[in-house]
Image (tube, rainbow, N blue to C red):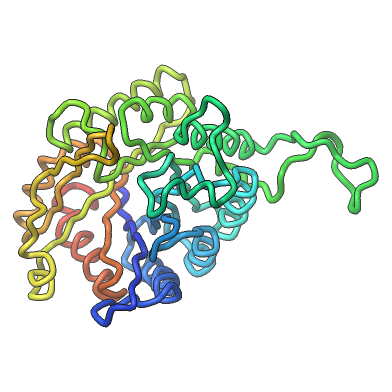
Length: 341
């Protein structure tokens, strides 16, 4: 059995060809898709976070709204860029969204990817400390967030407070028990996957990572997952960690599917540079009839290693079409793969 959810980037554009022409469309359609995905029996509704772009940005109002409109599906992010985050305010917002959903929040965070503007986090009021890189700053913010989510008091109370305080040092409120164990790190390299394991975070691995060996993407990603699990065991954590991978997977069921994805040339890995130093490998997309798709997916070592698969969805094609995309995988591919009974 494998958990299967969707991952939406929440793109919007005023183009007449787009079914998602405004930020309001992107947000409201995201809620509708999560509700529909739950009705289909999908396990997760996840949303990407990008700043300074026509995409989903501030995640917690959306996550809270999805949590209020659904009852079973996991809700999450993939991922929040921690270079931009105040970890204490984030802990409050995340805890509130988690409580609204009844403890279904799966919060994916990371050091972020190349953004729309140069050093965008500076506009949010953050900058690396002396001797830090921006990646170091993101990891520092993450460690503060993790400590805060433990729910232990750390702030000295006012001796003359407006409202009565409980005894001792004060923690942030609201506090959501168990959320600390539902934090995921989006790792782009083997080293950051190992770091995440040591800190007791779950692992999110997407469709790109540092090209560290020159091997096919799915093999490198599978090795990353194994390194993560080894580091987790060495750290001595008591619980079993979770691992997700995301993929572009489309079952060609009808003429619409074939028109949109039948001529895709993304059936092989691609290599590029995220910056002048970082060579990255981008995983292939899958688009084929269910029978052929099943044979292709059986060869993907990283999917086999993960317990959770996130299907990236073309959100600008509209809620109804994306429901069709998810349903096609759940009904016509997942059972044959052993992901569903």
